Image (tube, rainbow, N blue to C red):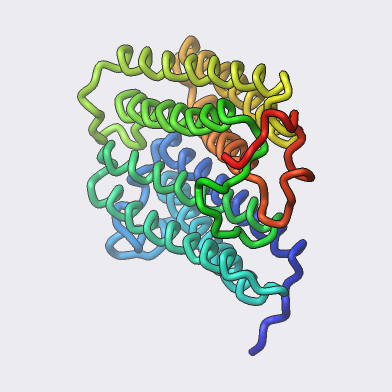
Amino acid sequence: MRFPTVTPAVYRRLALATLASLVFIMVTGAGVRLTGSGLGCSTWPTCHAESFTPRGASDTHGMVEWVNRLITGAVMLLTVAAVLGARRREPFREDLYRLSLGLPAWVFANALVGALVVWLHLSPVSVIGHFLLSLGAVANATVLYERAAHGPAAAVPPAERRWRATPPVVAAGRLLVVAASLVILTGTLVTGSGPHAGDERADRLDLPVHTIVRFHGIAMVLFLALTVAVVRMAHKGDAAPVVVERLHQLLIVLIAQAAIGYWQYFTGVPALLVAFHVLGAALVWIAVLRVWLSLPVPAEETAGEAVGVNRATMGAW
């Protein structure tokens, strides 16, 4: 059977659908934990030792966990479609094909870690690893989606690389990714120490919750302050319009995420708000990556066309 060819526009939509599915499975995975269904299926890949599926509709926790596994399977099929689409894309791009191969690899690796989560009875470290691998898949899909909008990436030596912003903004862009990573990592420690373990029998990290929450809050405030500072720099003409737009998007999702975080803290960490916080974490991660990916000048653009800032400040950095 010969698959039909795929246009660049169709492939980019496929990449976006794959990215959306990877975010969706993060939220449904959080739903498993938030409903206390983490051990609803006591084995893997079967649900129970004697049955591939839950025992019945009355087995609510088992149904929640099993449906999440089915969704994971659907996401895996979509990542395979992204690989096949990259292979059949006209014109073919080796860089997109290589990037697409990472998607099913991330999902398969995370499925194996998901099995460990069950076998280790929701060990906090395994749950944190499960979440971080999900963010790795999201990062892969984000890069694929962004690259699909441009020509093939050229192998440009660092000394000759051109940017859509001045050196201080480029340096700040790197710091934004580091700050986002710090916020996410401290957030996983909060989750591993706090409520909503996924099952009342699950262990928790032996960390003082309120202290970890303070560290997470401080990291979030610093991230937000850095984002505001970079936005102000960009507004002074130190970055091209596309970078300014991406920074605005990051600032919006970051403020929303901070608001949800403080809201859930002062209301006793209700499950629904935690689910929105997980979604917000994925959106913040995507937004900060898109800021960084908007900084280099795409290979098919000339410096004069791509860099919409004061020419006196621009150069081959």
